[in-house]
Length: 437
Ligand code: SF4
Ligand code: SF4
Image (cartoon, rainbow, N blue to C red; front, side, top):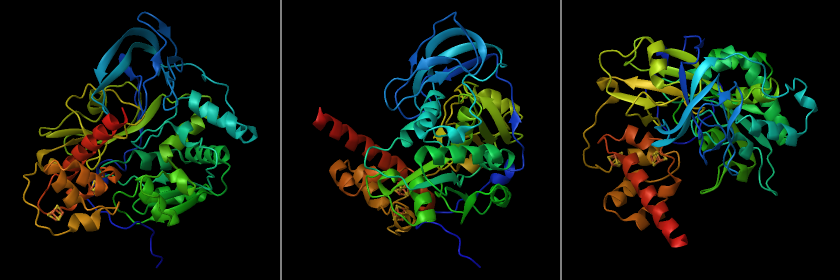
């Protein structure tokens, strides 16, 4: 039997995907009011170009790009701007949003469709991907056009699509891969042309045999991966598929690789082939805390509460609400936050699933060291952080931690390792900023 590819370290939490993996994606209409975040990604918010009372149409730009790491924002509906406000967001404490009263969702493409995208130049494709506001849909949400524009001198030879979806509970990418294989395949061809790369591949964990089969039939090279968390993290996916290692402090493009999520590829196909800006996304709503878990295609700006209602509403026991999966997802204090392009899942955990932990002392078992996919020593970084020894934590590589949560997951003493390491990262970054100022 062939040994499946994977990366060193990692863990295997309960997958809990059976709750939603067989549920076909249900498209839900936009609610009466959408709250569209002007920043749906890592970067600067777009600058609003509409004001209260303006009529907007579906696909119209409502925020203009504001810098290199920024994207234009578009209205997902036809309607009237009810106001601009600061509101809580799932990926940051709060941010500017455009509130739109929905009238309808119909209308033609916002851009000229390019079904003949093979005849377009890489520069034309990248410009369209930027204008359509496409950002990473796997969680980190980096503007996609930036990843397609490596600095001079950096040669990209490999494009990997990320279909690992290693977070427990989440099945949105899985459903997308089997229900919209052609969109992902077209997006992959566009991305490969934009990067001038031959022979791109998609990495999929072997718990999704139907997705592996669908891509195989579509003529896409599939790299089958052993199920392990955090296989969907860029650096781990690259290691698993190519054997290459991203240098400490470096980026995938430093070793000639670009990784894009499968959802991003589908959004790229819609932007380029169909002339459709990035206005919607597939969200898994799952966890023991909702009555009917499922996968939903929702307009950006839809409140989490509307999706939870689509999933049958809350059960009797909800201990924690997350945007994203239980390993890297962010706890939410309200379900009024809107769906953004990076919202892969909404997970409501029961008290049993949430495991409210009582922290014990470190017993120096080194399990966290063995599990860390970044080859860090989490117990030592955390100890230095607890003792506010920020320079020592920095020397131990605290900034290389990607907060994947694997160390906390395997720790028999339930140490809050990620919490300590993130605190150290905040303090180290603040200290570096003040030295530069
Ligand atoms: S130290 Fe950071 S990168 Fe390593 S396992 Fe813990 S959270 Fe993940
Ligand atoms: S896994 Fe937990 S108990 Fe073991 S060394 Fe790491 S922090 Fe200490």
